[in-house]
Image 1 (spheres, chains in turn brown, green):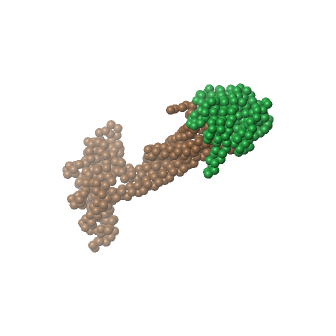
Image 2: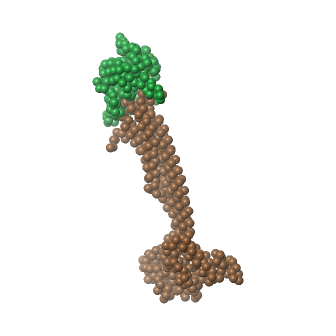
Length: 413
Length: 226
């Protein structure tokens, strides 16, 4: 039931008791505001760190060649370990549980790439077809490299959107697939365009078949890295795989198993899990502080409501003496408190979200802080919780005040 | 108008039972101007509470305008207070954040009279009290006499059958007290029953009937010559 006159009465009371209204509202608005900032910051941090993990699958293992640091079987330390296609083949054949595998070489050739009059320097990355999955690239046009490209030593290339945009201007942009671009002076046919969510450096890449690169550019079967994915194995199973790989390489390349610089194995799954565990901890912390904030808000608003009703005991007595029913008194006080707390909660919500928006818009992009957004459901629930607790805190003293004998309330000054 | 028969009232505080009204028999006719006197503890505020339907009683009967006032729901009691009774207090009891006009209009709010109408009626009553020019003033900007006039206007706006005044001149100087009493007499002439609780003899002497309470019983009930 909407009683206009009642609301006019409520509004005039609110308008004429500004300080009281402000104090009640402030404790609610502040609680909600802080909660949103807290939740938003937590989320922003998590988003930022999660972004660091983008640009490759989370179940990948990267095996890179390095240099020994320990003497082993008569070899002095400081020896370079070199991988060849044999290492790739051996890992592929002998290690169980590999989902996708690819070799890569960090090419060191003239990296100028040109199309017609446009040219630029980009990273040329020779690899197997599986690298598209390991690197988690998204094919925008055409296709990635395939097995036949490798078997037939085709001179084909998959380019990133950044490379496409740099080389293919205006009308050519949509027609990059099928065109020939020159890599270090050698024409390669563009078979596909991909996008990559990884670091900017990783977005300036072109991928070519590794056997083609070995034949055209290096004249050897050397590779620098073997990377693979492990399917849906558990962390323990993946750790076992890593150990198996390390032992195998140490036996073949003759270095100490404990020499972690001879080859480096990055197990992303473990890193990812460790970070996610950390965030589970941070989230728990955010929740504890958040609940603390809300409790402080509840205590604040309850306190004020109790005092407000105390302060209004006389007014309640007067109203009762001139014919107000207890119901009309209590319902007016409660409606007033709901109005103030709900409005204040809304203001806190808007201010908090506004500030988060401002931070994410105005601040220069920080790698570890992305999209600080608060869970709206949580914020709204918290607001409702504050409104309800403020109401309950006001309800009991209001009921008590409405039940007293007015003459007594009015007599003592 | 008001008919009390064997009215008893006691308060229980902890283990003690405090017998305040010990069997009052009283009849007040429509249009009377009555003062109730008595020292503190004589039961005069309790009587006022019962007459004002702000408190219940234990035994006996209380008829207001031929209606028995017992076992009333809070809602019914509020309705009777609103329609039949006007209150005037020693400490005025105006709502501090409402101006004079709004204070006067408040009883009509509880009768669901629209805002404009009730403010218009309030202005008429303020005019009758001679303080129309102060309608927009807040209570703390008014003198004691002006505040009491606002309170009287508020008591009268719902056209009650009876006005209960609890030490209405207690906070006023003697000149203003007499002015207020003159006002009461004038209101009384329009047919409204007035019951004034006071302990000041010169105030009670302005009324037509003086009821003296002592220890919860009526000690004397004198019709004066006025």
